[in-house]
Image (cartoon, rainbow, N blue to C red; front, side, top):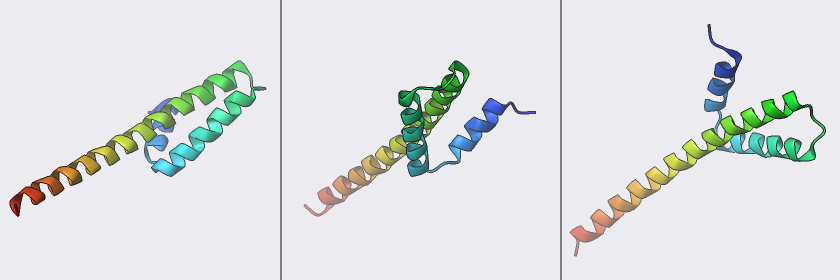
Length: 81
């Protein structure tokens, strides 16, 4: 059986970049506003960490795709000269 933390992490992985980013913005807003209990703040922080990892993976993947496309373009430029 999976734990609640594992289920939450798996759900975060399924999010697209924009969804994860928007939820992360909301988490940060709630933490900055205060007024939550210590337990709620810890849960929000943990969710924010998961969302930040999702965003980082999406951005790293996008960077890898851009780098590959640029490298391919550079290889193509050298063929005709």
